[in-house]
Length: 86
Image (cartoon, rainbow, N blue to C red; front, side, top):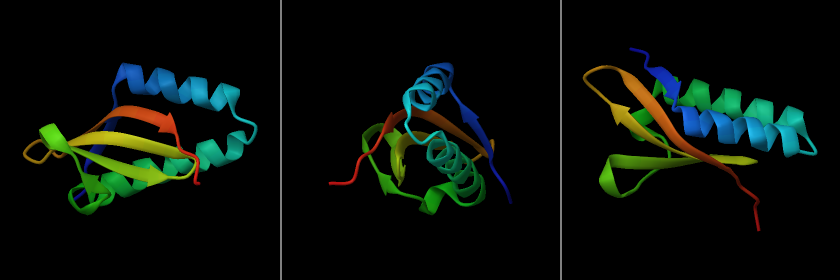
């Protein structure tokens, strides 16, 4: 069963800023689309757990934190930032 992926306003604004400042906007677009797809399919097994019921998932060049609302089948992306591999 699929989940609905919702980006909170703050995360959505940060994603837009990252995209606007990116040298490779296509990479940012592909990463954001991948985040939506993966979180929509299996968010409970995606990424790593964090305190307060949050999880983190990395799809370079992005990283996101999110919460899964199992009963409502909703995933809320609460933060996003540019991730650079070392």
